[in-house]
Image 1 (cartoon, rainbow, N blue to C red):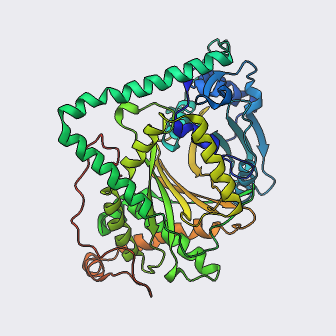
Image 2: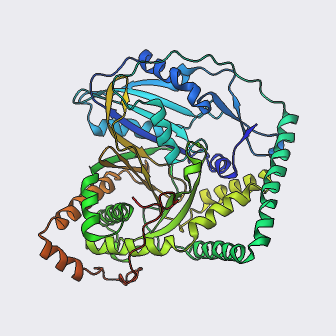
Image 3: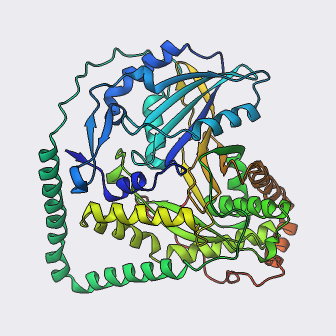
Length: 505
């Protein structure tokens, strides 16, 4: 049986009436849209490559094991493929409102956990596809890979004849329990197999344990409460969403002139977006602490094609207190170098793996209790989430129509009223900002200010070289408070090998 990992199952436990653990993407296309039947036929022809699209979650009795994926005997493609249209004038604001409404509706856990909506009526002869997937199915990287399966890399590709499919019989409850305990024994055996290697190489084993301990300690140390801000607190079940985009070439120009990685530039721009949001709300960004959860992909080349979640996380304090964007970029770069050397992401990966050895009933009960406490007293440890996923740098096509935009969506949870998703596609970088409908209807401020920060950095980078070098040497964090990061003093990090899990783009 195909069991969920502890991390996959955790996204099920985290979901409740107000927190919908759904990731999504808005794909915008040129040319007249296809009919709903044509789009449905396209998906049907690809279903044999995406088994999860015809499977649902089956719980193990009494939570004696982690949930498993089983074929849905009542699967109907027409239930998952929807159709909508925007009223005139069909602008981006209307598309954002539709996106917010769709993301406010939870997925039915009794069916396969995905939906696709064909949206007509966009201005400029455009149309869109909105793909909605539960986070227990995929992480951001796997979601992009999944879209690449559904779409084509060539404009003129015929729709294949669907392969025949019959659902496999659902296992009985007793079989689920036996399989769960057999799987647990297998997990324990897998860890036991590592012991001889640790005995043969004790120094390496001790260093690995020390690194994991250091990473856990750094993570725990970063969990102090932050000063109260309006972007944190209880949330409603309803969502708003906004997006913006910039040229990936501009981001590369900024990186080449001011240093850092593409991810550093993006995080510095997002920091500018939150600085502007706080300013427009009448709060003081110069003395604010905005701590973001930054998911990190732990996929290796060997894990390519695996749809399950393979992520860990870092905790980064976005330098919203720094007014100058170049100094802000320098601060982000130094902070990320420090975090990448902290072993925080590796420790998270170990914790997720060790979680597979614990009784699921204990993990599920602990998570549900934590969520209950969150609703009564929202946490003030993590203020937001910022996820950056690399997408394909070549055009994708749907039934001969070229995809021109790929705008992402990230879920939010109690305590986090605003979240940011970043995705690159075919020479552009797209920002998707999720907000709580009751408390964060102004998320377009973050989207617009983030893009504006990129444009400002680009303009600064294009200043004649002598002026640019002088500005780079003299730029310092500008703030009325003490910066949370040290001045630039460390040498630039060495390039990572091609298979590195923390490869910088």
